[in-house]
Length: 202
Image (cartoon, rainbow, N blue to C red):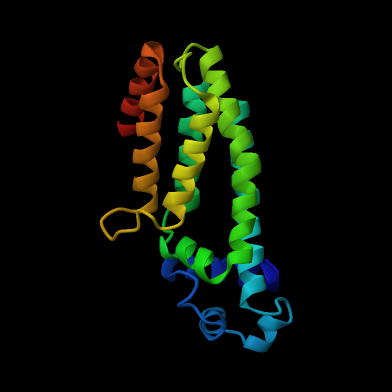
């Protein structure tokens, strides 16, 4: 692993554990055992470091969405697969990370907003259409409204709307996703959803 990649990896760990605002360049240098001068050879400031990390996370999430769509047998499995990938991405992530991102690095938060309004929106809409076609989702749902609802749910979770010490980001996102699914599934879809839930819990 080269120095730049090492800086990104260790900084990501710090941000995930403590949030962004509370981590200083001094903290990062101390964690890496190098000087700040070395870090500044690769990144002009903390904001650029944050930007590169978040852009990388969005690329990983985009790949995860593509894999979920390609490898899933049906629309319900596609969502469960996406949630599994999301758990890996968000596990051990302090909810303050996204709150700090929105409040102190708005231009970087816009990277996520752009991802949400393009790739994620397209994936949600496509999944709803697929579910209807497979008779797993109710045929009478309004795809436009539910796509917007789902996007709003994701943004609210990541922006700290449900931030609490009692539940992790993964727990909140999982609960909201299952609630969403139970609302859109047909009877056939409910049966399949319960099967996936039982499999995941065992």
